[in-house]
Image (tube, rainbow, N blue to C red; front, top):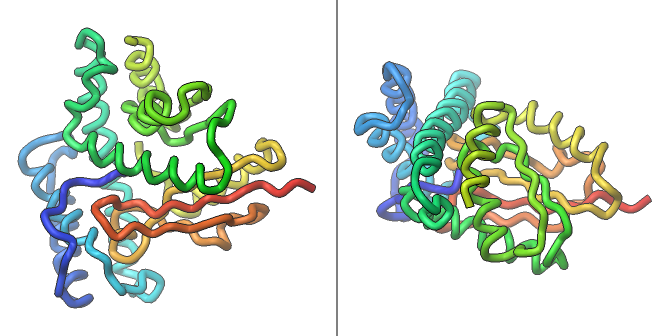
Amino acid sequence: MASLQPSSLKTNVSTELLIARIVQIHANICKLESLRPSKQVNSLFTHLVKLCTPPSSIDITALPEEIQLIRQSLITLCGRAEGLLELEFSTFLTNVPQALNNLNLFPYYGNYVKLANLEYRILSDNGVVQPKKVAFIGSGPLPLTTLIMATHHMKSTCFDNFDMDESANAVARQLVASDAELQRREEKVKILGHVRKYMKEGGTLLVRSAKGARAFLYPVVEEEDLLGFEVLTIFHPTNEVINSVVLARKPID
C-alpha cells in the first residue's frame, strides 16, 4: 500500500472517537456486495485512509480483542480492495500501446513514486546502491514499486516479482512484457523466516510496516519478528506515505 490522497495530516480526533469512526467504516465496508472499484468503495476506503494517516499516539497492542479482530479484518479488506483496483488498471494497461509509458494514469501513482523514492534513499544511505538482483514478494498484478525502481533508480538490477495469487503474477508478467491479499502478521513472519533461509549471507531485507492508526491499514512488523536478521534502521514517515520502512541484513557467520 502506498497511499490514497488524504486532504490533511492534522487531526484533533481523540483515540475513542477515532476507533468509533473506524468501526463504523468497517461495518459499512462489510455491507458492500463487492470490493471492486466503484464510487461507494472508493469513498469508504478514502475516508478510512484519511482517518488513519495522520500521526497518532494510539497503542495498537493495547486495543481490546474485538477491536483487534476488526483491525485484522480491515487489513485484509484493504488488501483485497487494493488488489482489485490494481488488477483492473493492470488489465486496462495491457490493452494500451506502450503500457509502461502510461503508468502515471494510475490514480495513486504519485504516492508509489514517493514510497519508492523513500525506500531507495534508505537503501542508498545503508550502502545498497545497485544490487545485482532484487526479489519483491507480494508485488500484486500492478508491480509499480519494481517498475519505478527499475526505471528510475536501479537500472542495472534484475527484479523478480512474486505474489501468492498466480493470476496476479500472470497479469503482472503480461504488463511487464508489454515494453492479493495482504498477509497477516503471523503469516508475514513465516515468510520472513523462509526468505532468510534462502538469502545469501550479507543480503539486505527491506520490509514495509505501519505505525499508529496506520496499523488499521497495514500489518505491523516489529524488530522481534525479524529473528536472525540485524535491523539496520526503521523509518516512520509522517507525511501521506502510509508505510513505515524497516531495513535489515542477514548476518555473515
